[in-house]
Length: 337
Image (cartoon, rainbow, N blue to C red; front, top):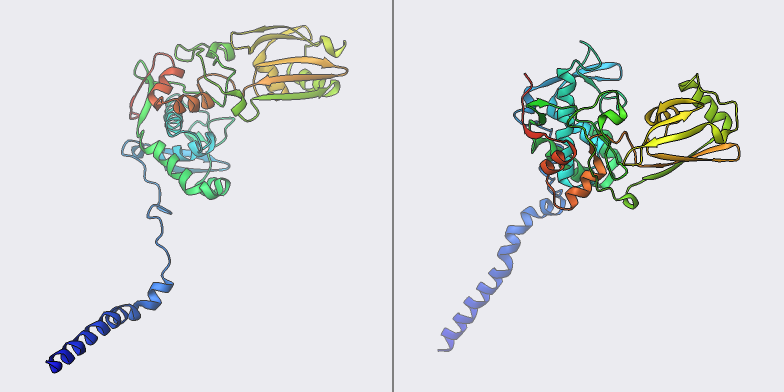
């Protein structure tokens, strides 16, 4: 009996030792690997962007400074959305921006653009649309770089080929940063009116928009130089308080026309001459200075980017946003012929 107990104790001791030793035998050979292995990278980080099926079929000649390179439409649009709209915006607002940028690009191609045979479009925002590379964008975005890049790329690929159409034809899908609560009709800003670019309500949240209200101040000499360069027939010989008068404003408060030294000009022309953020402005003379108080940023026609973001935050999807800002349109897949 005692011998049996001793044998049982011995077996138990061996089994107990094995419980401790076997894990060490498994772990020790791989110890250095376990301690030195780098954390797994995000599988999507660093992967090249791949355009959707429809966007990849259109290859553009893009003028960037003095060089012209060929890239597909989707890749180009990612660079535009990076540059034109804050990547922190709602995803549906970014999708709306992607579709507007795609439509604007196709419109430019089909109407001849500004660069003849040299290029289809350029990266100069004063001529076509702004554009920024992934490297530069990520440097600007800092710690949010990978998240923002994914949002922008998704905005383009998830709307692959989708275009804003009026009567089945791509529209001039212009956009701007923020309006004064109401967008402007094309005819109020430019020479021709367009049925799909009409004034619509825009849910701007002024206090949440950087520089929504701005102030521009000019000495009499500065204002005279700038205004006479734009309007050489103006008579600015009298007191500065009488240089601008008789402003006619639209329902959004933007200046349609104003007399400058006796010459009637468009508010948009005054905005351009003085470098104001929009044509929604008031002014006053303060001694020998002209001070302008400006609301919003941009020409005020078409899609308001901050208005779109507000709509998206309220639950609107990108198609609802686009059909709100562009009158009588549809949003459908479209392949340039």
